[in-house]
Image (cartoon, rainbow, N blue to C red; front, side, top):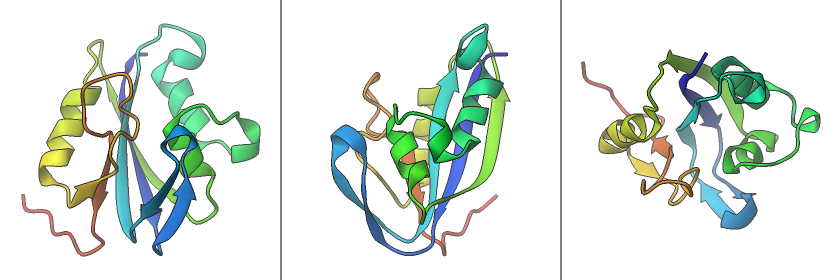
Length: 131
């Protein structure tokens, strides 16, 4: 199965985290939403296997993507996973929609292979969603 996914990550206290090639980044207290995609037909590139990889323990995987560095930090918590099965890559479109309503973002996070400003969007803990 192919598709796009969103990972909800809670950071309970402000902290500095080393994110591979991006260096040390200050993460504010709040919720972060990471948008990714898995468009493969088999193996690790399928939607379910990509999400399983992200949800696995840090010692069970090599650090490959920006999100791996964030998820391996002992003070960041994966709290929800949303999957959107689709034969079309919706990653950039969903990231942009979240960016439009977010409180902030981490520049260049997860978007080195596209023109998006970021695929990791920040929402303050007191952010109120309307709708």
